Each structure stands twice: as C-alpha cells, then as structure tokens.
Length: 436
Image 1 (cartoon, helix red, strand yellow):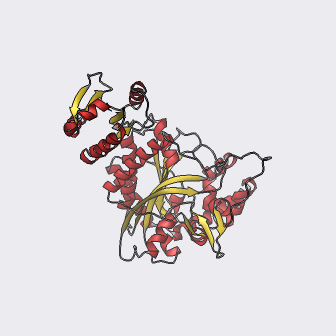
Image 2 (image 1 turned 90 degrees about the vertical axis):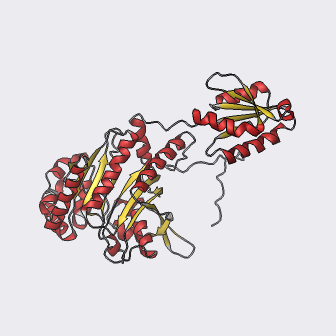
Image 3 (image 1 turned 30 degrees about the horizontal axis):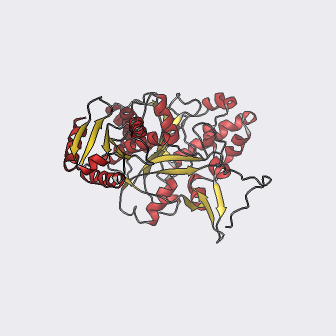
C-alpha cells in the first residue's frame, strides 16, 4: 500500500511517533529481558521442550473459531484487516491457537506427541496501562498428545522452578477444573438459572454473556458484582467422575513435588477452548494486574479446528509482567562488561589493534572486547577504558608495535601495567581471565 502523506506542520519537519501502547525496549531494560528469557529457555529445554517459531499473522477465522466469538479479544481487541486479495488477516492476540494450527498444517500431531515452547509479540487493542500494552510479549509452553494429569503437573512444576531459580517469592498458585463439555453444559444450566434470578444486578457485558457464555461472567472484574459471583454455583460440584479423578491426580502430584497451591473454584480463564485443568500464578506485587503465568487444558481445540481429537495443555507468561515481578522481588540481571578494552595510539596502530581483537576472539572463547573508536589522547582513551568497566586495558602505541609487544593494565584491581609479547598475549590473557 502507498505510504500516507505525513501530517503538515507549516513546513516544519514532524518527528516520527511511536504507536500508543507499542513500546521500544531500550538498552539496559533489554538486558534484563535477555537474561530472563535465557533462564526460562534453559529451564524448559531441560524438561525436553523444543522451540517452534510462528508467524505473527494468521487468518482471522483461526482466532474466531478457537478463542470464541463471545470474548473481549474477538469482539473488541483484535487487530484485523484485509490484505490485497481480500483475505481477513489478524495480528495474533495469543499463541496457543497458532501452535495448534502449526501442528495440524505441518503434520506434527498424527500419532505423535509434541512438547513445544515459543515466544514473541502478541497484539490486542485495549487501553494501555502498566504491564498491559497493545504490543505485548509472551512466553508459551505447550504439550500436545498427552492426556493424563502428569503432564499438567510437569508444566506447573516447571513454572514453579522458574520462580525458585530467579528468587521470585511474591507469587502463589491457584488451580481449578472446568470438567469436560458435558459436565460444563450441566454447570452452564445452573449458572443461567442462578444469574437469571439476579439479572437486575448484572452489568451490560454479563447480560449479553448470560445466554451465550455464562462462565465468562465469573471472570468479570466489576467490583459491584463480586458478591453475586461469589454466591454462584461452583463448577467442582458438577464435575464428571473422570475429570474429578484427573483433578485429584494433579493435586496429588503437586503435593508430592512440594508445590503449594490453592483451589479457586471461581477460576475459569478467559478463552473458550479450556477444559479440565486451569491454573494461574498470581501476585499482589504488581497492583491490579495479578496473573503473571496462566494456563490449562484445551483438549477440544484441535478437533474444533477440524483436526483429530488431541489432548493438549499449556501455559503462557507475559514477559512484561514477568520482568516487573522479577524487579519487584529485588532481582537484577547480571551486570555484563567487556573483559578487555583496547586503546590504540599513534600511526598504524589501529589497524593492528583491530586484527589483534579478532585474533583474541578466535582463540579465547566467549571473550568480550571493546575497541576504542574515534581516536583520542592517551588520557581520554584510558578514561573510556575505565568507564567501560573492563577488567583490563590493552595499550598499543607506536613503540609497542615496533617491539611486537603490548601493554596490559588491570583496571579493577589496581595492579601494575605489564608489557606482554604479542605472540604470548592470548595465553597470558586467558590465564588471567580464567583466574578472575
């Protein structure tokens, strides 16, 4: 499509603007993101989960069928548009439906079991607020083809390990069971009967959901309705025997693993495709945005999308909230700084310094080297070396170059500068860095 004309400002250049609710993640902040994402990826890989990378755009129908027509996401929040061929496309508002679609279109589910993780941006048009943005990021873990409570337990235990490993303690686990469609139908009838009796107290959204999806009324955050919601029938009283056994098995496995939980009979989750196990990791450290990691079973989703019946379970974690909670619990990403800062002084030294830096990167695995760029006096270069927080400065002047040696100066310990033969530098530096 042709780019729109920029707005007129009486001949003055107009600065570009960021889209509201779609934020830049700046250096400093991104280092915390990178650290936490790396830690979570390491944990899920240790449980045998493989990465799947998904497109950001999907056909709109995927989300209408999977999430449900009578949800805020589909009704109000999706970024949907027609492409040049008139196809309705949507920026993904969540990842689970895309994982199911990818499993179906790529033949990953036929007589197979998959343990997958994915991460990336999601998009929902809603009022931006702290921890909730129009472009937000999620980390998802999904297991398809497993039907027992053991996989539910593994996913929850794995998430508990994240909090433990990262020192996040201001969080607790709530679990519930939604049963299967048949038991939910009985529960739905009970809810319709109950809420119809107090219809004069329901808000506009709840009245609309009463006939279409009354379980979603339980998810209402309207404070004026909380007392009638608390008095509503409880799903656990309507569970079928198999779902009750599944839920008991899950609780026993969590108890055995030492994972503390609270059964919350009002926990329903916001998407239509959930069944049986649902859970949320909840915190009061972030104000009103309580849920940080949420998930559950979606055994009927693949079949609903036209595939074979496939049991499945997973969870999603908002990375923005994850980062905020980590910091609220006193967490800080490890401070990273270069190992070496190379200063080059005089004619012909910079080219040799660049070559030397590449030799060191070849010979010392993982070494971090910062080059002095833009020239400068000895004093200014050493000041930059100090503010880089490097452990050592390498000083290459004309005299050192002519003698095939280099100065090695400790910057953090206050030791004396040494003169090292260039041929010996890699070995000497590796020994000093490994000792540090």
